[in-house]
Length: 554
Image (cartoon, rainbow, N blue to C red):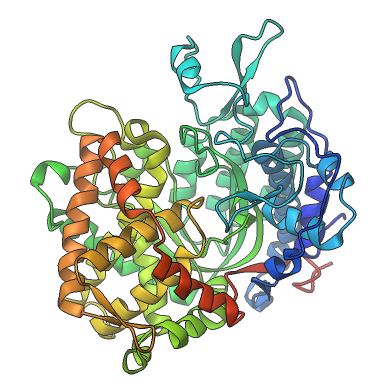
């Protein structure tokens, strides 16, 4: 059985594939012929702390243990597809590199652009990263796209390419990746044959079919039906962050997960509060008229494998899926808290950040329980608010285009804090609001380091500057540390919630652009404070040792 043991080995294998292309595309300024290693590349690599992805396998059956390598092999194929989507053919790029540190950094970023530094190129001869990655021809303009008479051009699951006459055409993912999705589907079906959980068996078979057809809704619904499964798999083209031209195209990724049944039972009760919290949102009634799905799930997992989009640059520690608006409105979503990855980020990143940037007498309020809750309710809050504009502009995603992801992440952050505030005052949460609010501020410092190229980082910059302008915190000039003003933070939370929900409901593209232009920036003072974190060698994010060998599996 072929397996990938460590993070870099896994990505390198994915980088050197050759896609089964019906029509080809390649992001970037061609293949570099002269490559210069940046003297700071090793320093960039040192910004990532290495984490071994393990879990307690003693609660799994022998058949479940046999399933894990199959699910990881299927996930590795998502690495291959994501390389094509974000760059093109990675083998020619890697073949041109002599420096091992540069190769590793290319592998970590799935390309020659530094994802935590605004997608700046770090290899000579490579131009700026195309806004549309490799989803569209690099020479295609927005106007040309808008004028093209192609019914499926805005589909999440098509590439835009040029035919022999230079005319735009669409190529479905399952056609572009025919051989690769056949392999992945076969692995999922083999895993389905092993499982004794009926819900997981149905989901894996339907997800295999979805990879072959690009029809994901039946498998999304089946995924929402699963309740008793100990293993889980998120796989396929899911998030649209990589498409910064329109925000339409989904990227392939995968997570292999082992459910923590005890933690999941503790979290399950919070989903019932969604309708009540929706009604109480601090915004006019017309912006909260939708009712969140009642089948929403909260679950805790140990993640044992990342691949594709989820493995590029900053690593996800919580998931809210499916993204299908119809499924969300009728069935809700499942919120997955990746407990082991979350704990690693808290210990290796959040605690050192708090020691450097939070006022000493407030550092006691930065806790893992608050970090876990803030992250969890961020995902829950994706279900609040509005999915369709109130004025006939279609879905919020369609109306806000490339700004949709960043604003949605900003909404989830701020409404997550709103939910915590409400639930705490109802007596449904332990801990203090001081814990949640102080940890929230420390979390902004952590996430803003992801940079402007990342939807989460951009959302954090907007919120940081909004909070600053509204007095939610103060900076002590003598110590360079920040102190939360709890009352003003609450007021700013409600004000920003109203602003974001109104922009979404109106489908106000220009208004979001103005908000990002005015607030989505890092001031010289904030940059200087973030530089202090780098000088203290505080990691920005994590990379993984992962795979069957790490878990002790054959």
